[in-house]
Image (cartoon, rainbow, N blue to C red):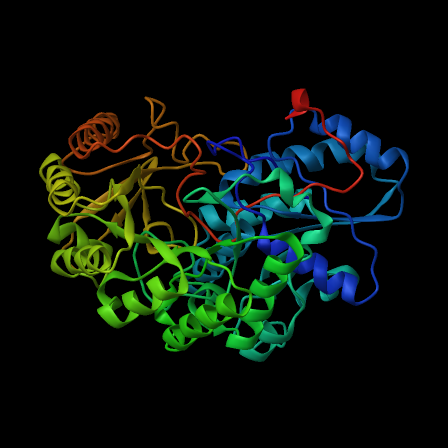
Length: 486
């Protein structure tokens, strides 16, 4: 089951690759699998009632990103009345994995805090928690009496190797109605895929920096990626592909992969339209040329800030000069750039926000997104923050600048995440230089001014920022949902 994601502007954009890979390995081992998706579905309890009216001896697995957790809890609470039909309930996905990573850090420090409280709350709702890679761990979760199956450990036999990632079955997209997802790249019907797992960098705001399954790079072979692209093209007619790798150019085999993708298009006498993420300071003209030839027309990059001190506090590794060069190289090779920006970092001020605004006006990206930072579990902002009174304080290791955070109960409150860009933002962070209220005001001013001056219209179809891994949805075949149900 995939909980709803009402915090997104459009819930039916990206398929949930992670849970579909779990479904695929289960099917390959002979298990019958259904996928229930509640993205955009208002009558989720009715769907659950209909399902359990004709099914029993069911093991329920729920995946959830951090903002989806309250909706996952809601599903479990409704399912209490079907406990005689349910063999076991399992929670996996980014939230529990990242929170468990923070929990282990608290244990090692001998001070239990908000991560420990969150994990113990989740244990009261679910029989088993799966943390980290799920493709092997799901089989352990089905039979264990343990409350936690920890696959987020490089020494564990449950931790995926490059070979595992390369040879595991493709996501079970046949279990979802992929035509219900409306994602396009420059007007071309598109779908997402993942060629590489993990990012080795240490950005302070990023969830997963302390989690091996999101830090260690695991790559698929070129042949494996090509087989999936070819299957999606020949079977479903897709010519648009979003690579959800984090980040594409961390892979040293990226340029050979691009060349093979170009040859695949020649083989089928077609043209792909591709989109993906790159790391700014690693981006160069050779990569740009190869990506353009392969069909890339859009790049997304988390530049985050146009202020050098903020970039230092973030530990982004990229300087403002690196970021400016990345945009220039992309533009010189016909690649459009979506600049992913964020404010509310340690040391943030009106001056640093204005520097971000000016940088955007100077480099002129074709699209941008500016959000107020969320302190996700598994990030240094969350894991290294200290309780001070009734809030938490993170201190930059480089400058001593501070970021203050409201204590959020992630199990019940999704409102901290992003927000409607048309006046719907909330801030749960503040600094010595700017209040939470003024962060919202300054974000709205930046959004309005930059869009007006660069003549960038707001794209209402965008699903939101890349906040954790494997966003997406799917519905069980046979459940016909009326338009009024969505």
